Image 1 (tube, rainbow, N blue to C red):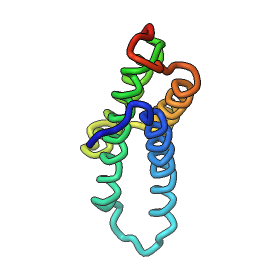
Image 2: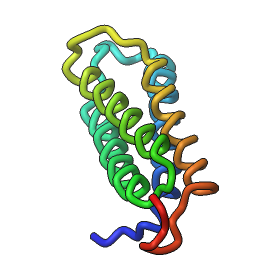
Image 3: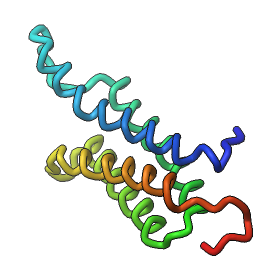
Length: 129
């Protein structure tokens, strides 16, 4: 699969927004269904978390390679790592972590991609990173 470095920030914005929508709408969807007896989340919903975090990894990897600002690169990897840990923790239920943290990390990634898209792109390989 060949993903253009030029489109990685767009991929990051889209995957972060869809991930955020998924995080917000999933509890509302399950609360709205009064017929659900079990409190377990269906496997397909958990799988979506890993699809989004994989897309986000691809976007962060390529965007961090082309950014011209070190704080953006660090922000990408710190927020992605923390979001990944939250998603992993949600699957194995090791600690009680508020959903708010996932919203914050996904929103931060989206904002970092938007900022990077607007201000931090290298047009060629000779730019100062």
